[in-house]
Amino acid sequence: MTRSTWLKLAPYLFTIGFFLIWEAACRLFSISTFILPPPSAVWGALVQYQKPLYTNAFHTLWMTSLGFGLSIVVGLALGLLVGSSKLAYAGLNPLLVGFNSIPKVAVVPILVIWFGVGWLPPVLTAFVISFFPIVVNVATGLATIEPETEDVLKALGASRLDIMTKVGIPRSLPYLFGALKVSITLAYVGSVIGEQNASNLGLGNLITRASADFNVPLIFAALIVLAVLGVFLVAIVDVVENRMTGWAKRSQMGNT
Amino acid sequence: MTAFVELYDVTHVYGGGDGPPAVEGLSLKVREGEFAAIVGPSGCGKSTMMKLATGLQRPKSGTVIVDGREVSEPIKITGMAFQNPVMLPWRTTLQNLLLPLEIVQPHRSRLRANKAEYVARAEMLLETVGLKGMGSKFPWQLSGGMQQRASLCRSLIHEPKLLMLDEPFGALDAFTREELWCVIRDLHAQRGVTVILVTHDLREAVFLADRVFCMSARPGRIIAEREIAFARPRDLDITYTPEFAAIVHELRGHIREARAVA
Image (cartoon, rainbow over the protein chains, first blue to last red):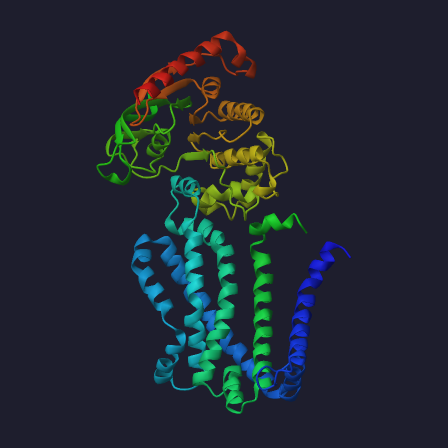
């Protein structure tokens, strides 16, 4: 087999290998299903509870996408503001860092007090946990414009808005996509935390109920569904990224 | 002699504070259509002079006059090229060339409706610098020398009256550099644009320019001005004549003095 076929197969082989080792370890050390269920038991739970898993996963996907969408919009706007104005950077930086240092689990009860139990707390938790990397990366993209590029445009009488739209935004796109991949997984964390504490639906809620029943295989089944959803969304971001910022990945183009 | 670009007793301090001036008591005059070169030891404020003349920086004292008007903001009739070609990697070479037209009036409002005309203009420019048919390539698919040619095209696309070149050939190998000297020489001859070239390379200055200014070490001012009287069009062969070597040698002396003072 050639190197490139191996590269293509690697994600599948590694994943299968991971589950095989897990299964073997469970059997070898005869670990109780109650502590760590083997993949076969998790698969059993997946099949047995496929209907609730499916509906709740769909709900979580929705919550995550809404929160993620919100954090793209707000993160982009804040990032452009912070990256293009020294004053905004100086003023907002401590606030943003401080806000991001707050554990978001602690925010959920406040959201419940404000909005009650329902779909808003998970969406907002997903949002607050995932917008920060977007702000930081977009701001970095803007702040690292070559001074010569700015001079060329300024000498022609370009306004700040011109420089932003012609250079700043396209230039920060690779940074934005890097941030999106971090953010999307954080958004899942956020929506699940929100659902665990403040929702009657979603995988987070399902996990809370399963743990109350000591149904450990179901907990693991829900976690695996979450992992698959995460991989799926990051893959979508990857495709869009390659479409929009292929120019930034030229060093890898030589290898394909 | 009427000056097209005139700096009179200009002093500039970066940041506007009381720090050491980058240039002090700098005066020079460049005529319309003239090719001027500015040479000097590194860090002497050559690039500062460029920023002052284009209005990117405002002097602390003194006056800068370009095309009969005192410069108080970016003057929009300049094209610039730097040692780093700074092409935007997400645009093709052709789209990079069109960038100034998206900014500067009157082209900005005409561009959309007259796209074909401007694309033709850009392609013609590419052809004059030997990049025919390269417009669809991305800048990172071009060699360093080709990128610098494209960068020159970009600086000329809006037909500026003043062309500012800040060590545009500094990063190129000797052969490519000499090729590009000829490209610049021909562009200047064709278009009658006023050129100010900042360079470290004395041979480059003497070969290309009508007038060479030597700057002192920081704070920079003009310590010598030398007319270069070789007939145009000049051939690369003149760089090997004794007359040429004598002028380079003379300028070398000025630079040595400038460095010794520092």
